[in-house]
Length: 177
Image (tube, rainbow, N blue to C red; front, side):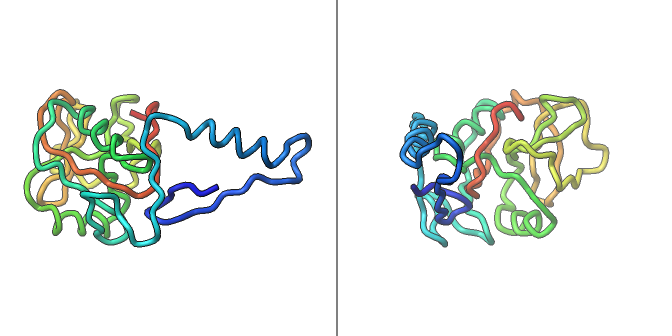
């Protein structure tokens, strides 16, 4: 069975030494978990989904238009397939890469503290590892935008803006946002 992961191809097999579990049963269970309405993408190494461009180690798609809310942006990215979500900036290298590649306007990122005030998480579930704020930020708003200087600031999540999608094979974790 082949599943998408990190813009590459991964192969997963059920263990045949698990007591009481037949390999065929495990494959059926995994297939049932994958039979959602979300598109399933399987890409060879180096490939990006349609409309995405490889920059560094990830694939990105700029919205080119505004959405009514931060959540609308995230859902639009997730509609591109499992492993797509609004951009999560993982380190200074990715921050600099995005700053030079997408230095157009401010845009929604996949980071917020909507679940726990003051605890910024990426839509993929982990605590945001890269927090470089505009001076005076973060304020009491919840949803983070990345600006053309490579800095974050927060806005109300109901603000209409553009967004940047990232396809890196990590699925969004709905409970994280």
